[in-house]
Length: 445
Image (tube, rainbow, N blue to C red; front, side, top):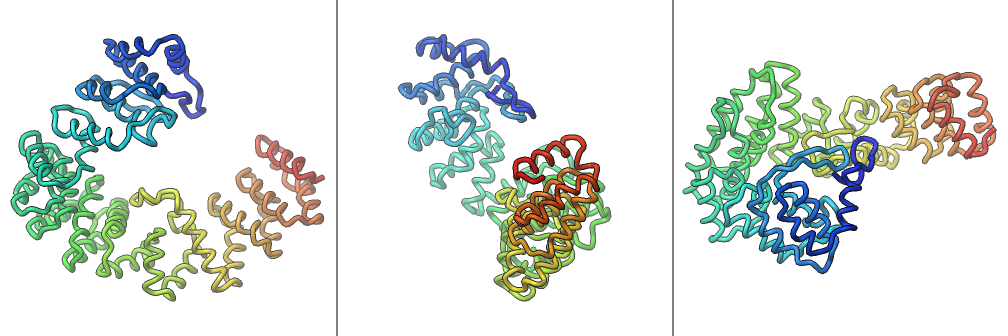
């Protein structure tokens, strides 16, 4: 366990035990305890050693690469299981687990990766080492050996990066499990690295098998990426199929999301019409696609931007299930769109903000309330007071009050204080407490 676990970030007794182990044990005792029969003791002992900068951690890590005993870990709210050897390696990985632990340098990490790749072990770290290995001819031989002898799926993906025709049969016959429409996750990833025409019939066949499903598979994400990797007219044809041929409307949404993610991964001018369609009809847009399409056709992009700003609740600005690298930046896209509107048509942008200050969606309201506080156009005051005087949701009325206070106007401040007589919710519960504190901190009476 880490120093703060659970939703409340509570310090667990187990972490107190760890700090006591650090305090009471000598270096030699901790080294000996890394060989203790109890896997948890081995992990905590090694963890304690990572705080001693004088110790060479590499030999200890190498010794425990075969250590496959599973331990349960909890850091924050995340509970998981991992092998002891993986725990050791994760601890010394830069910017991972405990940032205060001593980390190995790049040359030491290269040694660990080499041992992981070229010796028998079952660590998850082995798969990561395979995925980042340099594509040398020596490693090609090893990767092929891992595929043919161990059925190593990450090695199959790496093997595909070499794009050798002799490996096409290996990729085509790769499948895990016996389910007819499942087990192709790594096959699709391999094809994305090596989009050879021989693979296309498999992709087309498997895509058509999904169209009647009343459930979705996360493998479809990789299936669509594999199709998009071809960047040709046939790929466009297959990527268009889900828009009209998926039988179940709820499942269609997953198909469309996966297609959108695939086109972001493999950008091609051939996909431009599909991207415009995604924005116009499916309400799918991301920061990268917005930037790309704005360069392609600024006027069309601005017209669609205005539509999006008028009904932002129709767009998923808070979560893009495909764009993991930019997850959390979706609010920046709304910000970018509004800034574009303010620069090109300020009167329109002011109307948009006013309209959205009455929006029932909490996150949308909060965003536009913050913008109103920045711009301080007097037309916003009436809308903000409507929310302050009528809403019972603290997340709404507190943001409305904060925005109004930013106008720094005595008459507005007096009206804010008097609103407690109009909206009784401003005196109830935690929201009422926060409202009173806000007025007190700003000296509003």
